Image 1: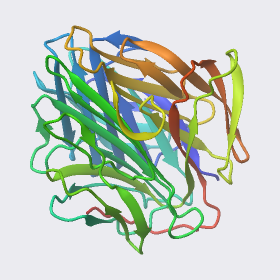
Image 2 (image 1 turned 180 degrees about the vertical axis):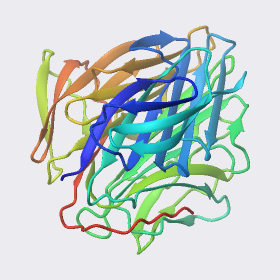
Image 3 (image 1 turned 120 degrees about the horizontal axis):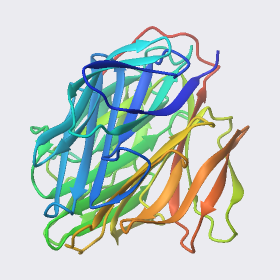
Length: 415
């Protein structure tokens, strides 16, 4: 049995309810979503939240939102006792649920906070003989007094997804007017023990009147430890991946920030590769483009971008996109906000079950989008449905079964 992956979506409910149709019993689930209740784009809302669970007791969620139609404000939150949620500055936790169990054909959830309107939540479920139960979710505090810090997982991970909305380590939510979101991926064990195979995007929003919304893209950074100063410019942290040891990854970070919380999902027992590629700028959609360099045929793909070309320079507008595909199904979310706008409907978001990646603007418009065409022996093929003249950069994490690894005993670790 190979690595199993299923990308899907469900509608939140009440009480305890089961999600079926996955086709196998998951060992890990990544949740992601926004404020949408159906496919489509909405002006005035810009939510993006992520959650992960490897068991009913090992989970977290984290995220941010900008809301320009209700007085222009931003907020962010996290919870390490729930599997997914949405935090609203005006009402507190707007939506949350926890994992009850992994089931033979899906999973069971307990709705701990029911929203006024049911929302759609996307998921990527994984299982397989080599994956076992050695995946872990965890969190820690980025120290503000040292340039290097260590994340201890308890095992040697084959890949890591990291998220941070830069909430200070003592708070589970922030009611200020700032929102941050950094998304990082690392797959350092592919070729050598010291591989620079890491990618990152980051965004920042200060949604007051006028708003100041910025984004930055850093290649070869696992997590952006940037800080917005009084100049309202995002300063990129060093964030350089150094090397793995038996249990840890080490990072070099900028010391110019307040200690904040980060969250991660680490997996063992998978082949993994992180690459980046640019949007095509020539062609008449729809057309297909193949991307290679994985060294294996992926079982699933995770895409993320800030809708800019790679640069260490701060760019105007907040644009964050995240999508996943198992080769058949795909789900994509977007959240963004216009820079220096301060006007009604300056924020926007989108939910799409027909695309695995999109490049959007807060208008909202879609300069570029693509769906999965096939998972290939050395990569994947996309069908581009829209392009423009800007060569924006996408990051992609590919996962497959690692045939070199045998069954491992269950392990868990957190910093």
